[in-house]
Image (cartoon, rainbow, N blue to C red; front, side):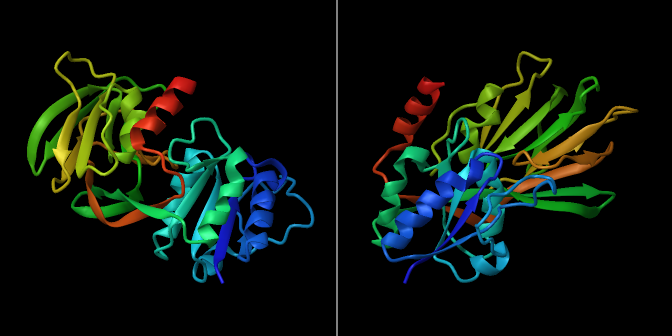
Amino acid sequence: MKRFVLTPNPYRDKGFRCALYAERVLRSAGAQTRICLPFDIDRNFDLPTGVKLHDLDESLRQCDAMICFGGDGTILHASKQVIRHNVPILGVNVGTMGFIAELESGELDLLRRLVEDQYTLDQRKMLCVEVRRSGNTIFTDTALNDAVVTKGAVARVLQLSVQCDGTECYRVSGDGVIVATPTGSTAYSMSAGGPIVEPSADNIIITPICAHALQSKSIVLSGSRTVTVQVGSIGRKNAYLSVDGGRAFRLNAGDQVVVRMSETHTNLIRIKDTTFYQIVNKKFRDK
């Protein structure tokens, strides 16, 4: 019997409307389901009554797939959890863009195909991100979309050195720099002027943010490269690292953000016969 973990973002899927409908669809097809919160929520937030919530980590150990209800941010957060258990994930868009999501909220009846094994897996590359300070690694994370080094809200421009395998590509004087996967090429990197790269490509994309130089363009690297972003002198200004839009990690002058392809990957479930370019045209045309 198939077992699925349903993780609704309570701020997006109000009253777990989509998750509960999906549960009915899956159970009517003969599957078992567990509903889990994808992250900790505010204590004063009212969750729907009558819904039994299970421990996410324990449930992932015994499931065939996770179905995530929310926007891209929810799916990105969930990707860090599923890779620990080698569990594939299907995203249901209950947000705005939902570029990584496979289904819209009105397509939940298609979930029957999961029970009938009518799906494929889309393997997406991830980045290993480290912060090194005085020769020591003080922070590590994994990114499905990107790692972003940026200035604080009131800071002036950052001075950054961007290196590829130890050789400087260029210096960035501006708001920061984005190091993205092909999956992340249609997110912040694209908004900053970077190229769209097919998700199946083996590349790392570097895109400056509001750089104060005409020659500061995006660079598309081989996936075998190691990218190092070194923070220059910042004085009393602030610099931060954010991985997949998560909580900002404060950087000091001289810190190195080292990014390379991770050995882990995210398996996205595909149950519709839709190409990458059809998704690009639909999502960006609709917006």
